[in-house]
Amino acid sequence: MIGRLCWEFLTPPSPVDFKPTSGVAESLTPSEDKLTWKCVIRQGLTWSDGTPLTARDVAFTFAKIMSDEVAAEANGSYVENFVSVEAEGDDTVWFRTKAPQASMTALDVPIVPEHVWREVEDMDDPLGESVEIVGVGSGPFLVAEHRKDDVTVLKANPGYWRGRAAIDEIHLIFFASADDAVDALCAGEVDVVNRVTFTQHRKLSATDGVTVVEADSRRYNHLMLNLGALNRDRQPIGDGHPALRDIRVRKALAKAIDVEAIRDGVYGGFSRPPGGIVPAIFPDYHWEPSEEQRYRFDLTRAGEELDAAGYRLRGDRRTGPDGDPLRFRLLWRLGTDYHERAAGHIGGWLGELGIGIESIGLPDDDYEEEYNSGRFDLTVAGWGSSPDPDWILARQTSKSLPSDRDTTVSASFLADDEFDVLYERQLAEMDPAARAEIVKQAQARYYDLVPTILLAYPVALEAYRSDRFTGFTRQPEGTGPIMEQAGYWGFYTSRPVG
Image (cartoon, rainbow, N blue to C red; front, top):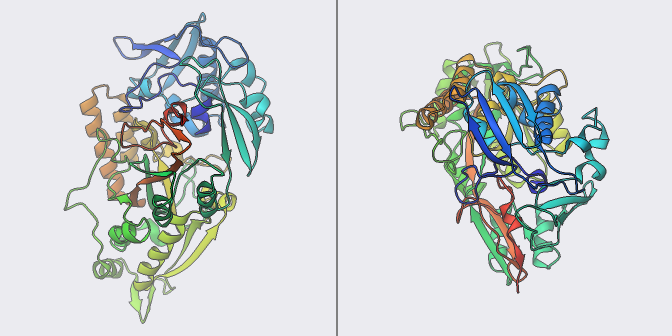
């Protein structure tokens, strides 16, 4: 979110409907064969230190992602198909691709200043997180101060090309718990909170001077099954339970999860029924399983399918073909309300099937370490998607598997040739309707393989001090959230009351 507020993008998504708008790029035009794109840079843009923003900054940004594995961790999928990115003078960039690339008008990458970032040779160097480096931006706000686990201060950029924001500063304050953040909002110590729980929603709805927002979100939450974590060379890593490599077991577990009960018990009714991995907020690419395809909650059927797979119930415990009890480690993130609630429900249902559950709640850093290394059997997790489906689909491909750096941007550890082919096909399909159909085929393939079990599209619950601030633009218009947008509109358009 800080990145979206502090660095302008080539074609940021519209606040109305997510369609690409002009940002750093005044225009982006393909050649007849769709293999070369001419990007004309908006004139008069400057970095916050007064240096002109030019085509060289754009070329540097993408070249860095193409050449540096660390820089590519978040957005590397966008450049996998690139042959070259070259600046021509100050105002033109030429992108050349191996094959047509449908996501070119939706490259979700913040453009950074070459004259600043060329000083950071090692992307793991703490210098890259210093205000000296990250404080030079081109967005509506600028990083002015950062204290880990305390506060990040953003100041309005007086030279922002759309015009200076009406608010002077944003203080992004770290709270150890959501309850503390909500208490601070009620006391008037903070002005906006998000990821509010449904119990807090009730409290805030009755608080004078506070407005609660119920928004469609870009996120999906899921139960990830470690179906045999692999690295990028498709070599095993981690220690996931071998039973989860059996698709019969995974399909049985999908029938052991009651998503309606999760909607009520975990989200208090504030979630949408799950379908494909492209959330329903993006209707052009969203996929829903048919009635015949959809996994229905049925513990009896789930038990029968586990029996057929060789995991039979003996007494009150289920054992595998080797005679050992079937037992899974269920990993979840401490301090995240829905993680803890969902883990409790899931552990209960699997316990009824005779599956032993070791419930493991860990703080953020420890959770990420276990997750990235594949040292779990099941984990509650969630991902946010960009308006263009390329990013979230790429997270499920073999190219997203972890490298020898022991970090991953994989959302599922899936390594499936058919899914990879569908991903490449949708990327090369320039006809929007034909591309949407391939995107839906990829989601159907994912759903059938059950690398994860989607639990919900959560409703984003936010609240703000409407006695102090107003004008927050939601994305998409009228139904989306204020925070965690695919853009900067929520805070950029806000203003003090009066």
